[in-house]
Amino acid sequence: MSIRAQDPFVDSFATMREDVNAFLPLLRDSNLPLLYGPRLKPCSGQWRTYFTEKMGQDPEHLVLEIGSHYGEVILKMASDSRDTAFIGMDITLKRVVKLAQKAQFGELLNLTSILCNAKYLDALFAPQELDAVLVFFPDPWAKKKRYHKNRLLKPEFLA
Image (cartoon, rainbow, N blue to C red):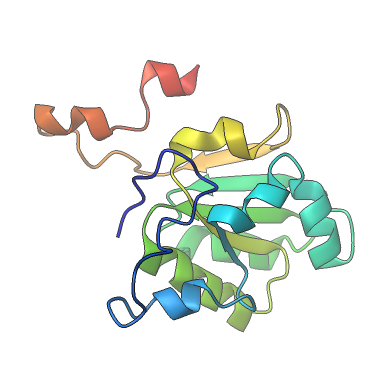
């Protein structure tokens, strides 16, 4: 299920029953390295503090991957660079849960998965907070004009 909420700090799943989606109980599992809705708010503009507490040291860099999917790239990077903090962002419930499970299994304290639409980066990150942003194939809608409204990489977003 994709996130359509206008406020990234609102729990879009609060009224959904757990028997409707098998990933909801996992989303709400506080042991997984996964943040969404109200759990994102304390990290807003404070990601280095969040990771310092989680990793037990200040991260050398803070890297965001937009559209991390199931995490093939970000998991490898987090495994290879344990002094760098990584955030995998996606708008699909199943993907963020799967990424968080893989990060937990790999004992990657430097990786957190977040459920959020990338349109709200300004609300999540302070200016100059991120050292790098990775974006791989974010716009599968390119072929049909009616899907252009769903594109992430538009002039407004890039500005």
